[in-house]
Image 1 (cartoon, helix red, strand yellow):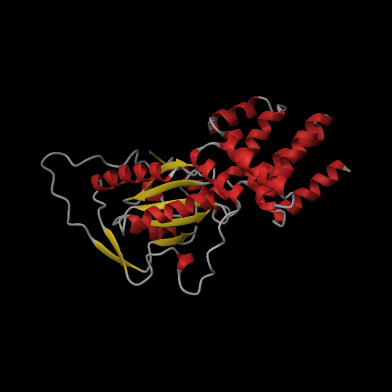
Image 2: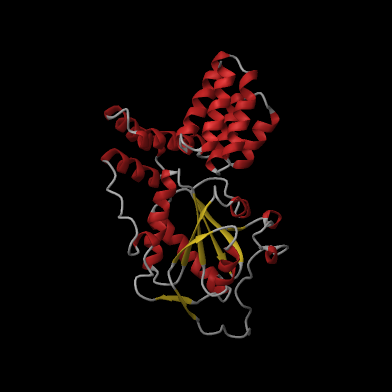
Length: 322
C-alpha cells in the first residue's frame, strides 16, 4: 500500500490537507498518550456512492472509521464482480469499515486523485489521507488479508471507530426495499469466466467467453466480456510507466500506441484512447489499419455501442475508412 501523489490531489475535491505529507504516521512512540476509546457512529448505511461533489464528507468520516473506495466502471464486468465481493466482506466486518463506490467515468476528479489507472481498483482513506490498496478483481481471501493490514494501519493512526446501522441499512443499496430485484444467475460460461478473472487466469476467461459466443453468436455480454478480459490480458505484468515510456519513444509503433490506448480504456479515459488510435489510423498501412480497427471495435463493445463517445468515434472511423 502506498500514499497517493499529492500533486494529483486538486480540483473540486478538497484533498489539500494531504499535500506535503509523505506518509501516514507510524505507531505511537513509547510513553505517548493512550488512544481515545473507540467511537461509535450512527449512519444510515455502510454503503455509499461517492462523487466529485460529496467526497469531502467521506474524508471527514475517515477520521472515525476506515473508508474503502471502490473505483468502478459500469461497463467493466470485473468491476461488478469486485464490487459484489467488497460488499460481502464489508458486511462481515460489521461496521468496522464503510464502502464508497465511485464511478470513475462520471467523477474524473476522483479518478485522477486516486490515480485510477485501471478498473476495477480499490483504495482507502484513513484519517483524511488516501492509501492505494490494489487493482483488479482479487480473490476474496486476498482482499480480507488486505483489510486486516488496513485495520492495523488504522489503529496506528487512532482510527478505531465503528459504525452502527439501524434496520436494513447495513445491506447494499441494491437490497433495500423498493429496489430492483437481484439479477438472474450468470450463464455457466460467464460464471466460469468470472471465477477465472478472480484467479487472475485471463487465458481461461478468454476461452470461456469464446465458448459462450460459439454457443450463441448473439451473446453481446460475452462479446463485451471477451473484449474486456483480452484487454486485461494484454496489460497483465506491465507497468504504467513502461507502457507510456515505450509509446513516447516511438510514436509510430502501433503495438505501443495500442497498449497506451488499452491503458486509457482500463482507466476510464475513453476519449483519449479513441483519439490516439483514430489520429494514428491515417498514417498506417493496410495490415496495421486492420489491427487498429479491430482494437477500436473491441473498445466499442467494452464501453457500449450506445454510448455517445462510441457513436462519435465510430463515425470518425467510418470517415477514415471510406
